[in-house]
Image (cartoon, rainbow, N blue to C red; front, top):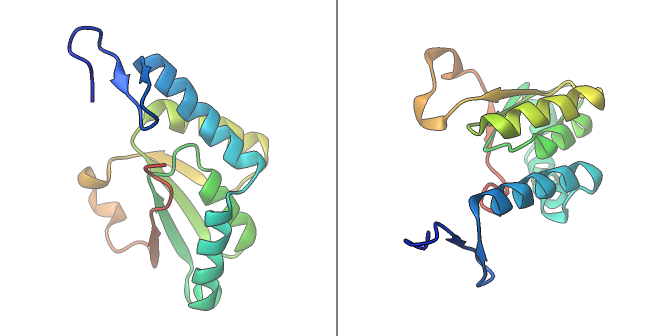
Length: 135
């Protein structure tokens, strides 16, 4: 929620932050995920393993991928599976693409909006994930 006079946004912790402060926080949050994989990501991937993702899947789309940390973790865990991260925020895609390249990741990060997918994305993936998009 944005305060009408100051254009400050109310955050989940009860404080007021400018859009710039929120953006910087989000960038730091995504960068930290590359250094330390969140427990929820590991548990989620353990669950997918229990359902046979490694043997029954050749491609996964991670929706709302941010800078691609979760997609990178999936790709490093499941080396034979193509993982593509989709994010609509062009700044996160730009920064994430650089990080992914620097760490030698095979993940492709694309700037797309889930609600505006072109035909080339329809029925292309055997798995679609969306994890930690609102955290």
